[in-house]
Structure formats: C-alpha cells, structure tokens
Amino acid sequence: MNGRIYLDHNASAPLRPAAGEAVLTALEVIGNASSVHHEGRQARRLVENARRNIAAAVGARAEQVILTSGASEAAAHVLSPILRRNGETIPVSRLYASAIEHPCVLAGGRFPAAALTLLPVSEAGVVDLNALETALAGHDPSVGGAMVAVMLANNETGIVQPVERIAEITRRHNAYLVVDAVQALGRLPVDIAALGADFLLLSSHKLGGPKGAGAVVLGDAGLSPAPLITGGGQENFHRAGTENLAAIAGFAAASCEIDEDLAAATEIAAVRDSIEQGIDTICKDAGNKAGEPVFFGRKAPRLVNTSCFAVPGIRAETALIALDLAGIAVSAGSACSSGKVNKSHVLSAMGIDDLLAGCALRISIGPETPGHHAERFLGTFKDIVGRAG
Ligand code: PLP
Image (cartoon, rainbow, N blue to C red; front, side, top):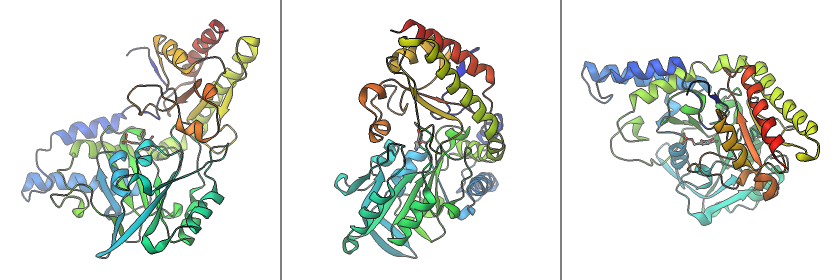
C-alpha cells in the first residue's frame, strides 16, 4: 500500500500504533476472564482496565460500560422494547429515530418495523426539533414508553446534532435517549452526562482501535436494556460471551489517545478546508466543464475531519475509481453497504435530489493526514474535472 493516500477515516481509521501494541500484548494472555486462576485473573484485569479507560473517554464510570463486538451490536442491544431498572421491567412501545441515522440504528434493533417513526431533518441536515416535540407529544404512554435515537455526528456529512437540546425535549416527555457517538468520539468532546443520554453507542475502529469492538455506555439512571445475547454471566449479565481480549485492549488503548486528536482539531480543520477551497478553485478554473461544487453541511456545525461534496456532472463512482487508480481512497456516500455505491439516505433526507446525490463524495481525514495528501488529492481531482464535460 506504499504511496497510497487514505482519506476515508469515517469508514475506518488506521490502527494507532499504541492500539496495535495493546492488541499484540493481549493476544499473549491465555486465560479466560471468567476463570478464577492466575491466568483468568490476568485476563480479567485486562478487561477491567480497558473498561475504565473506555468509560473515562466519555466521562462515565467503568460499571456503566458494556463491551460489545461493535456499534452495530451495541445498537441492536440498546434498541430494545424492554428496559430494566432495579429489577423492574419497563416496556417501550415506539422508537423515534432521525432519518439520517446509521443503518444499524434504522434497522430498529428489537423493535418491530411498525414501531419505528422516522424524524425528519432540515435541509442543513439537523434533526427537526419541532417534529420531535410533536411526535413525543403525540406518543401514547399507556402502551409503553418512547425511545429516541439520534447520532451526535453523521458519518456521511459530519453534521453535528444539537443533542443537549434533544435531551431536554426527550426528558420533558419522559422518553429514553440513545446517542450514537461513533463518529464523534475523538473528534468532539463526548461526555455522557453533559449530553443527557441514557445510552451511548461507541465503536473502536472509528478512533484507531481494531475493528470488532464497541460499547454501550449506560447513563447514570440504573436503566439497562434486556440482554441481546444470553448465556454466561459476562458483562455483569448484560452480554454473554467470552470477552474478545485483544479487541477490547486495542479499543481502550485508542480511547486513551483521543485528547491528542481533540487538541489537533485546528490543524485537521485546516487540511479539510484546504481541500474544499482547492475544489472551489478547480471548478471555477474549469469554467463550464464542471458545475459549481456543493459542500453539504459546510455552514452547519460539523466534524473538522469530514467533507461531503458533489460536483454536478462528476459521477461519484467515476471519481472514486479514478481516485483509487491514482492511489487515493475516498468514499461515495456511505461505505457500510457491502462495497456498493448506493443512494445516500442521508442526502435524500436533506432533500438533495438524486442526480446531485449521485455525485457526492466523502473525504474524511485524521490527525496524521499531512497537507501534501490534500495537494495530491486536488491534483488528481483536477484531472478528473478536466476530463469531464
Ligand atoms: N454508527 C455510525 C455513525 C457509524 O458510522 C458506524 C459505522 O460505519 C456504525 C454505527 C457501526 O459501527 P460498527 O462498524 O462498529 O458496527
């Protein structure tokens, strides 16, 4: 992969050296964390240290963290029509999810499809708070509670949602709030109490940990979903199954480094902005060969590492393939759909027409993306625009 340029961190961020080392060290731990002997206790220590570090990354205590195989499992676990508190069972009858959620949330977890209500977003990609207010005001509590699922930052556009305000509305209506913080962790400060979330979803590989690890973080209210995977008593009976020590250790090592990423936000934004300015200039210089570029969410609060844009007339698949051949990895819409370039439900929800959405590319960078990678991307993109028309 020498010489390649990777601008697709929102799909999966490169493994951090510290996370890689933690994975290798954990692979040497032979015990099962449930065993009482020395080797078992060594594995248990590793899991519990990791849990503390992951909890600290979102302002939580260790006992609030349930380790999972990733955020998709975390979503399937949390989106449950049965919650528990102090031995009491709490039925939930309806899930209200924003229309721009990741497919793992839109799938609705254990709610039947008929129990899902989609909440619209504005043209700027922000959840319509009036629609949320109206939906929750119309919820019939006699058949069960309401659960709201909103992501902190969108994977395709990077647009950040006003989660604190959403939490204020959900609290007023006694609804439970699930926040998908997968793309936000390491890119924005994430504190479960400040957000007002009842449940957070996290994924290791978006912050430079290994793939295949994630977590549900429970809010402080003693509320937990009925287990999804039953069997052994691991994860304090929340999630059965022998712990994936290596992935958990790598996830924790990555979560210990997020402050460095947050401190580099200005530099990351500068590289992202230089790409957007470069695209503007390329299209202007190309005259009528290319339409005016559209940057989705450019004026909204968004992640510093993400740019989602479309140049009318430059099809996303064409650009993606040309960039890949030139050694540059970017994404078209969301990459979470088995390598296919599908219509983006996120851009559709923002009212973007299919033709323009079919031209949408996503660039997502990281703290180690140097400025010359932006320049090389722009050089190739200029050729692509030059060949169009
Ligand atoms: N939520 C968001 C916003 C994501 O971007 C992703 C992955 O793309 C997920 C959830 C699913 O995470 P995982 O790959 O850990 O299942």
